[in-house]
Length: 459
Image (cartoon, rainbow, N blue to C red; front, side, top):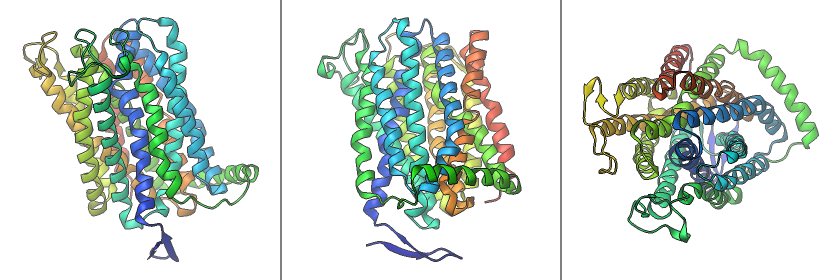
């Protein structure tokens, strides 16, 4: 039975039962392995260290591909959001772009180590999958205002992110414990031989993360399609395109007069670029700095995901209690401190103090530098989820309710229009200086600027 509530100044609104809300939350669970397995902890570091000529060039190439996908997403998100608002439907768009995610992810199986000829098609597959998952997320986010009352939006958003992080943990445990083995020992993290006869020498355990991500999404996105209600269809695609573009034009014209919204979208553009770049290159940076392989990076990812789960859950509560703006600002301050700390950690030094470097083949995270990087990474994981969850919560609080998908399109636009800048700068600076540390240092500027702009936002 639907829940009925009253929003101040509006008519009575019916909300769906708890089962529909839980089914919607499973989208985050379904999509998160793409970010956990592909872009951060397994496939991206594998690409940089075993497919590309060296980690620095691998980081650079991955950055250029991420930038290209981000530019396409930035150009198309507002248009698609406007069309979705005009047509009324969300699920058909999620299905279409989810298919791109599945196809692109599955193609990553063909990324064999040392085969430079596979790099262009592999990066193309990565771009297709990235476009798919980001656009599907735009339309999934736009369903939120119809699921719970306004005073529960923060908790819903935080719970979604926390659930997604748990999905990332489970997928990482599955890969590290049963699929990806060390080429030296031939054993997984749990001491098993890889399932399905996956060959450690040709890194089939790393490459299987692509097909696994696609299958995972198909299975776990089904509850949302089956039990979460969609908007009713308003008009056909052609009429929706025409009306949507008109509404988008009007929105862009009035945006300069919505000073708080404009400031928030600009701040989101800056700090999201920094956060995405930080997550995208954190695993690659660790692989190059400490020589970590899939086991170390994946274990690191599990610990970060646990921190992110707790952070997302707590951030949702703080969002409803304090407001999303304070959650966003606090998260960025912690990120700034963590990045500066990471830049002062090397394999043989921590905060300018010389330490014993890691021993090849030694115990997991045995050196002081590795443990310091682990602590700083946990800080990043713990605040990354609240930052993103509170951002979509703040947008819902200040956006017109009848154009929510359109504003989520603009939200995605500002999250992606310069998303190529961070990876591009990291790629260029890393290539020029041949230093991963110099490439990562640019991220400090993104969070300082984001904080300054957020101060102009009224929620």
